[in-house]
Image 1: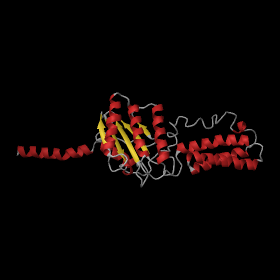
Image 2 (image 1 turned 90 degrees about the horizontal axis):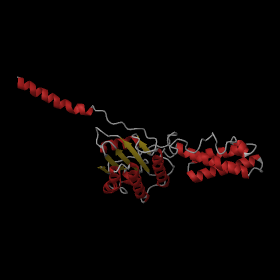
Image 3 (image 1 turned 45 degrees about the vertical axis):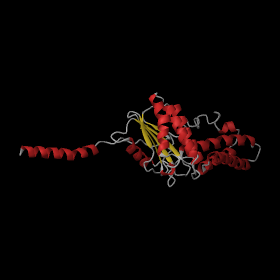
Image 4 (image 1 turned 90 degrees about the vertical axis):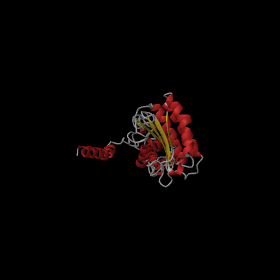
Length: 297
């Protein structure tokens, strides 16, 4: 009887063990607000800004989304499982094109993973992802040079993506293609503001209605040419129109404080290159099948 009771206790323990493992809280996935999400504080502001600019430039040229995530740990999950959850939640890359790639660093676990979306599996096959880890990431990470390793790896990934035939980008941000990204709007409005001030000074002798139209066209056209954001460029045209209608000198129009003195507060002011405050960076509906490679250092 005693032996039977012991067996029953052991069986219950074995049955409850998987449930207890499942009950462990999974590592949280941070919100997606920037091409570089570093919840460990490993990278400084200048390093983050350079990597953000690299990712944004790639997206403007090719439409692809390069995403960096640095977390302390992925435990209790393996890095592969956590990376898939991140991809599923963030939806990196464009819907139907699936041209996103995730570079995930689990710093305390000393694990790193490169995972491409379906559309980039040809440009970044598993063997190539593994080689990037072994040649760029792992050696630099062993020396404590996280920024150097990530910069070299992302530059290589960007080069591989450049050679891939992808649909032309519709918008400068992964925000559904409607041109509403915070960074893009700031850029377009800033361009429109500067062009409007210059055009108004040149066209100051013209009648006010004609001057307003020409200033609006110049501001909106310049913003559209440099950002390809239609709605944001329309906002820049409105700024030009108002500048052309205003009376007095251009300096009086901007409040005598120079270019945006107190109005714009500088381009990107504290928003890490225009991403942080506007929330303009996000997933575009892309997906991944779990390809790529993982490694340690």
